[in-house]
Length: 194
Image (cartoon, rainbow, N blue to C red; front, side, top):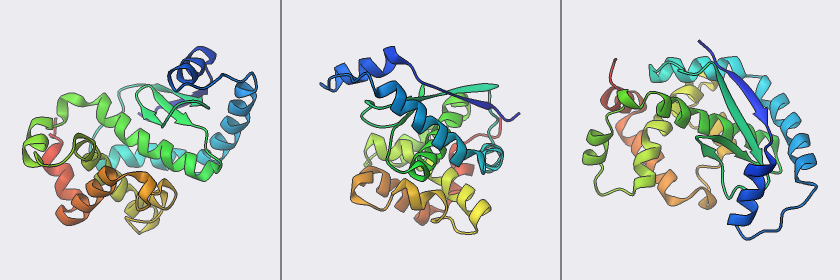
């Protein structure tokens, strides 16, 4: 099953982010979010079916939800996988890449009982928690990019900015581990067959 993505804006959700981050909520936030939402939907629609089916295929995990709400936020400090929240960025291509990134986390979350977290955390006990949580997701993204674009480090990774300093050392470290260990090996080692 391929889930339907329901793009949405929530005043309560976004104004809460504004308050938590010490920002003053602007009445233009909803208009900005709706404009961005349309651009993001258009960008993502070019490959949505391939992405959603591809994430399932390369991970061996099934989508458990028929519909996934995707909240667009002006004030979220960063994008989040559950509830799936995409922060407004200048470039919709970057937003689509971040959406793919968060969808990889989301399918793992939907199948938590099949993830060998204890083994992963034992094997990488010297790595940060953020790095550990990005190892499986990084392997999924690498294989998806390789399948769709013939280049594991191309495609969505170009816009996800994983190699840039702003992506964070923990995320970059997870990708280094994926490249060293092999994305397929990571999937086999940390995702059980059923």
